[in-house]
Image (tube, rainbow, N blue to C red; front, side, top):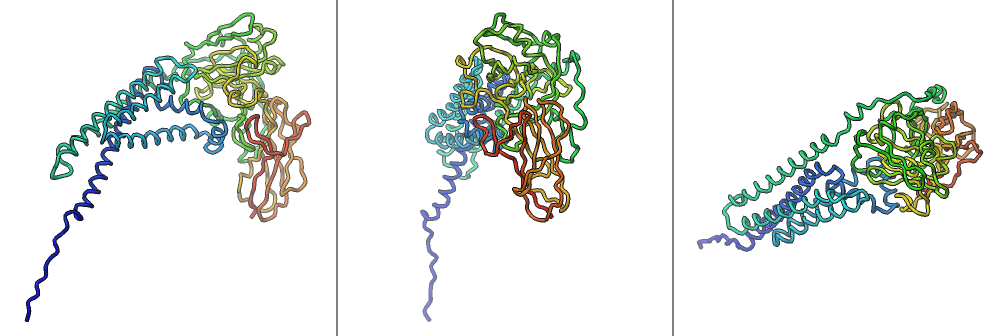
Length: 534
């Protein structure tokens, strides 16, 4: 018998090393990306720490976000409001952080080969922040400091970490976690920890330093010269699910461009009225409160509101007569625009004829019986009935200039919006909710309609394109307020049905059927909802 010898194949070292090589390259790339993320975190952290001294709105990410809002084309801005609603600002900031994360990882990978190049990428973060901070109309040189510091510290951290990583990967070691690599890991982790500490500490200190809660709580509101009677109880139909007649402050809509709320101590606040006037006026907060205060029940609406949208709210406001202040200053012939300027640089242009035609425009200091919330303009904001907020409601108001439309285009007019901002007639169905399932038989339909400063004369409802039927109007509380309504849909049969609503203003003009987007002068069209009757 012949002996058979079995030989074991000798492993090919090149083939065996290939997976290890790929894993090694992936590990090095991951480590390089980690150093980039750590450097970017250091940049953000030091930026937040520096912004505690110069103001929260000068923090690099906030500065970039604010500039992005200013540069965003109107259609894209409207898309963001329509899609994300009041969450549009967190979405924007989240997008900035995600973009920064991706670029920081790329910077780390580049720095693994060329540390200076990676450092330059991180430094560019700071350069963009400096540009963004200085692009604001209210910018001072100090506003650029947080982004400049962020760029310098981030670039330095990137170069140091990249060189440590190169040294660690260049020296052969029997174990991937050799001493030099542990040093890189420790340095990267320590950088992230210091960044988190700096960012958290800076944000906490800024919140404390610029907090105006105590100053706001200390404000004592004088009684109005003439106290309004409460809105009649019959102004609200009492239908479950229908919006309350007066909107609680916590639920009042908010649409603005501020990524950080301007925080103004009323002791430091003053309002300057100047421009085409005979007698310029500067008034402090205490002096403002010593003037006769008046109440105004008013439904404020946003031009960004889609048909049937949520951006309409009602409050009882307290403030000083803006027309009286204008008359005191003496408006010169030829002036036709009043420009309000916010602490954050926003400019709002109001037609002067709307301020001097007898309507009760206010410099408001309170809403619904309490001092203005910071989110709604504390310590002072303007309100002009009959106009959308973008041409009438300057929050955090610090300056009023009497001028002309020919001489100056305010923020929204520069972006193509209508100059006047007259509120269009609108109505919406609130009950039943869209796509609700309701039992067959009698169904209550209810909602709200508004045409400030004109008032609502009628509301009509129809089902499945049938004949229009008049809804019951709640008691009219005034032309500057929405009017709520209800309708009894009797004999509702099982199936899917479409309900529509339209309103007629006090001048007899019927709300148009044709749909139009909010840009450039407010949405039009009949609101409809689809329900399933079971």
